[in-house]
Image (tube, rainbow, N blue to C red; front, side, top):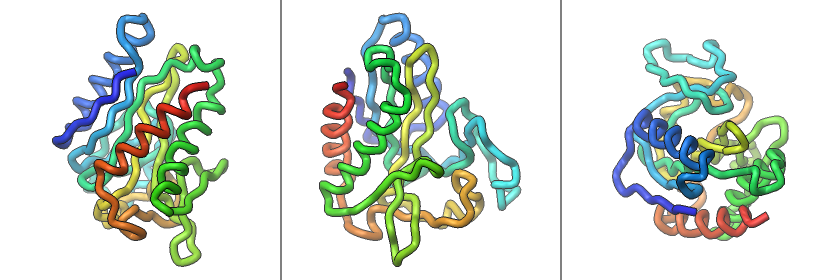
Length: 204
């Protein structure tokens, strides 16, 4: 498995093009699986379950994708983890794979003494902030020929005002949070812990 870490922001469209090619290569056994940590330049993207009503600012430019989920924002201060993982080598259990991704994020936050949880009705990772449930990590991927790809985003130090122009993930009754609301954790330390937990949890 290749672990790729990009130091400079990566344009969203270029990242997706790279992912699509890697999926093709992995499905044909011509390349190894991938976990890729990066940041994007500011961009709004929507998944296959997107609803136009979730766009509050009609001036927002949206990039359509083939991932699962609805509309979200990516940009500076937010950590992205993309993956290309062969589920056929892991009992072809998509539900188990989702749990592995969720648990890897939860365990990472726990390593930094931040309590979080998953929600079966609203996919993603949540925290309690002033007794209100707020999303701190969004998960969106798809599976093609038993290859899971796309990934998750974790709000680290980003400006949460970017979410005010949309209904993030189509959920209007809950908030958005970030790691820096709890602790100032350097991005490289967060990547190190996520990498360890993902690799360990994907051994099933």
